[in-house]
Length: 111
Image 1: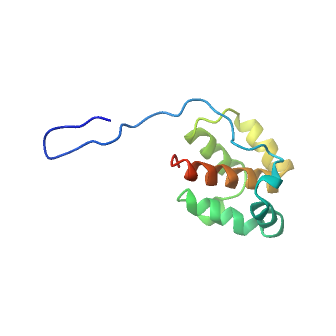
Image 2: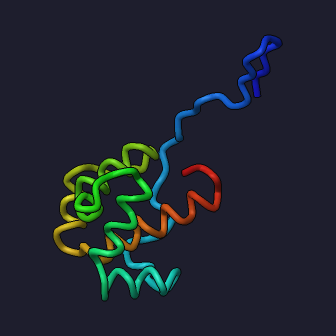
Image 3: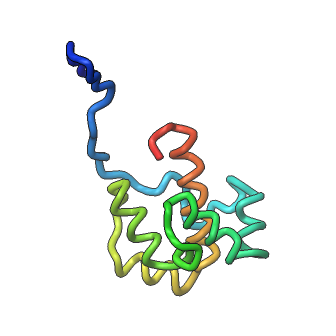
């Protein structure tokens, strides 16, 4: 923490995130059953929820672009090719994993 003696006080420093992975696995649906059920029975609703958390348009919440933006922002290991493959072949699992990660980062106060 850095403090400045004048009228403006800086309480936190910007920091870069060290390389990491998603906090839950792609197929860890049982970790959060409510997110899993929402993802499989109302996937567009979950996509809109994710988009609103990230300040994006509701139509952008699903698929590779949102996953890539999120992964880049939090320095999560992976590639755009991997994001594409996961989103194409397992969109519900990918969306649920992203939502679980957002929830965990909010709990850790790093979202």
